[in-house]
Amino acid sequence: MTGGAGIADDEAIAAVSAVIDRWAARELVGDGPLVAADRPAEGDPLTGAPRWYLRLRGEEREFVTVWLTLGQRTLQHECQFMPAPETDPEATYAYLLRRNADLFGMAFAIGPEDAIYLVGRVPYDRVDDDELDRIVGASLAYCDDYFPTAMSLGFAGRYRRRPPAG
Image (tube, rainbow, N blue to C red; front, side, top):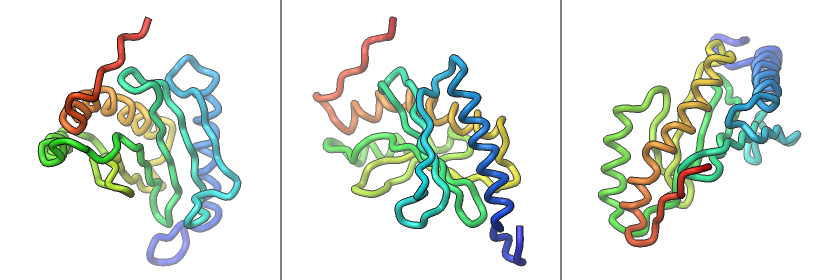
């Protein structure tokens, strides 16, 4: 890091990028939920910051995508949880806000187009294989755990649970 404000220099960004690249490559050859990892050369469409798209096999949703973006000081992670609720948005938001107390290292938030996201940030010095496992695993677990109830509230009468796999 350089500068008194703790903004990452090119060396720190390269080091964290290498950790993420190695982790994704290893997970892709394993038998886990990661089915695709992409790191577009142009990075984040708004900032150009290094960014990864991780596609995971889910249970309640066929696929869950987690975006990892390197900011100036932190690794930011986000996952689109569900679209903006069409029915009973107050109950949907209340349910998710109450669940925030149970989440570790991330929270439900309203994002673009009023869609609901799971978001979090991790300082660069905490980014390692264990932390990436936690981010990805928690994103997948929270989607599987809370998606059915949130969708039942936000899309009453239209949402049907996926049949169990296998």
